[in-house]
Length: 112
Image (cartoon, rainbow, N blue to C red):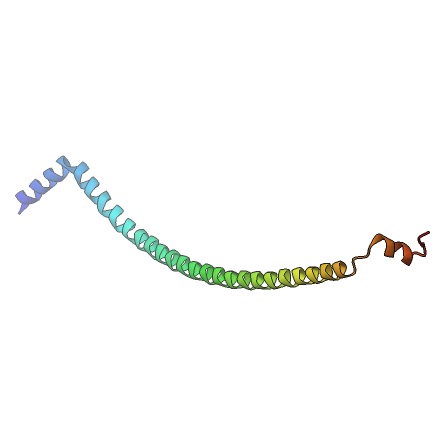
């Protein structure tokens, strides 16, 4: 038993740098595992938030499209009403088309 302990001690002294490296790798793995789990949880939370934001943006875009369509319909109606009013005024002006002689008579100037 004493001989095997001496052999183990001699091996540890000869290969202490490998033991330190293996110990550091194990320590880094254990510490990194906890942080990677927290990073994964944060990434999942960010992903869910992104999905929620995306749905909200799509909903707002749909509402904007509906608003824009209503505005286009109202604009077309107003344009048509204005064109109809302008056409009616032009027709009235054309009906009242007065010759120059009539205009002078309205002003009180008569022909000689």
